[in-house]
Image (cartoon, rainbow, N blue to C red; front, side, top):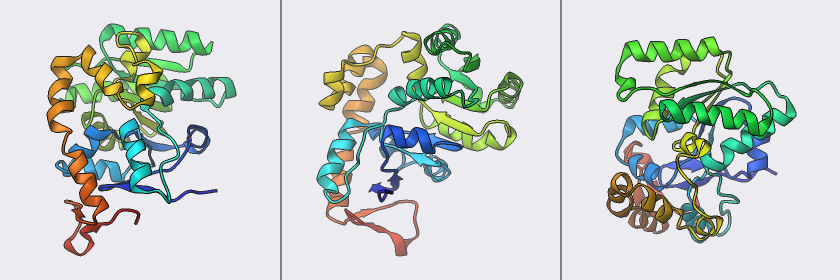
Length: 265
């Protein structure tokens, strides 16, 4: 059974379970929006246009998952699929099924990306991760560094790129350069997942995730980096979703004759 997509502000979320996504994700770009993404998608048209290129868009946020059940009782989101949960499951699935998936990790630090590669291969008892690289700060603005990265990816034999350099940088880089990597059939934008896989960052306890307060655990780990984002920049999400519930939300990137997004449509 195919469930209708769920519209949150100006993006459509695929209403899939993890098992369904594993089965259907054969090619294309996977993005996993959270609250911060949704806020950025109201202000950054290039980021929004990248999202339009995604083959699969699934809900990373427990808060958004829970709110969908209030906004769309007739068609709520059936699962929260975080990048940090889906990626290790993806690796396990493809290594066990021997589908021929070969992954290149792009992100993290010089140390953490190599540790993540080693740990994933050890856990899956395979060589599913065939390459790893930590790009320097500002790499996305350097044609020389971008060319070097593309060469490394293509030379590795990978057919899947998992990029974790933060949003919207990771999505924009993929959309700008995917045509230069014809061997890559799947792209996963995975944020901090490489750091989680390496052990440099710890995931929140399961009970915190279940109650939608994983953000509080992340804030305690990286207060300088995340305080402004979580406590100031992301707060308008509740007002925007209320506007959508009342049929007053307007997608800033659509023509005037398509301006209203009503809850449940």
